[in-house]
Structures are given as C-alpha cells and as structure tokens.
Amino acid sequence: MEGLLDFVLRDILTRVGGVDRCVSEFIRVTGTLLPDKVFYRYLPELHHGGRTLAGTPVRAQLLGSDPVSMADNAAALAALGPEGIDLNFGCPARVVNRHGGGASLLREPERIAEVVAAVRRAVPAAMPVSCKMRLG
Image 1 (cartoon, rainbow, N blue to C red):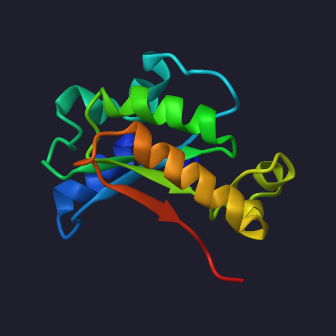
Image 2 (image 1 turned 30 degrees about the horizontal axis):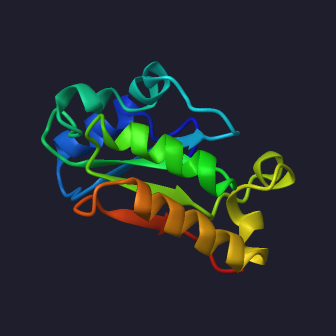
C-alpha cells in the first residue's frame, strides 16, 4: 500500500500488538540494480535485523516484471537481512499496470513463474519468498 504502510505506521501498529509480520511498501524494480540506500529508505528496519522496533519481522516487497532485474535486486536486498522477500503481483494501480507490473502480470502466468523462479534461485534457500496477488 504505497504511501500508507511506511516505517512509521509499521512501528505504531507493531507496538500496539497483534501483528505477526509486516510487509514494506513496494520497491519498484525497473531494470537496474538499485543502490542499498533505496532499500534502507523503504525498510529502515534493515538497520535492526529486519525487524520493527517492537521486534516484528518485516518482509521487503518488490514490484517488477523482468526476471533478471527482480532476481538481482532480490539478491542484493537479501544480503541486507529482511525477514523475507515478497513479490507484488497484486497492485491494481493503473500507473503500475500500464508499465507491466502488479496485477497486470496475472494475465501472464508464465512471466510470474519466471520471476518467482529467478528470485527463488537468487536468495538464500532459508529466506522465505512470498507473492501478493488479488482475485478479480
């Protein structure tokens, strides 16, 4: 949820309690390897072992459609220590879908499979990889 579920809100919600895991806002991957500072901007929790100040694990969410770029960025991000990597195949925003990301990929299940397989190979086997999808 771009612009909503940022570090501050994750901190507040996890301090209140009842939250088992958080996912970052999506980090858009467009064909280049992002610098670490981008990952730290979206996930300041990386400075705290990939956990909120209350100790709740945070997964980093990537949004993109190129298997190689997604895998390269997932590997770089995994080295910084998030709890896991989440792939966004569910964003309904028109601007995202117009550029071939988010929910528009649901029309291309083969591409989704390629991205997931590439990311899975790129990150440590013990690191969870999950996907965000929507029906309809």
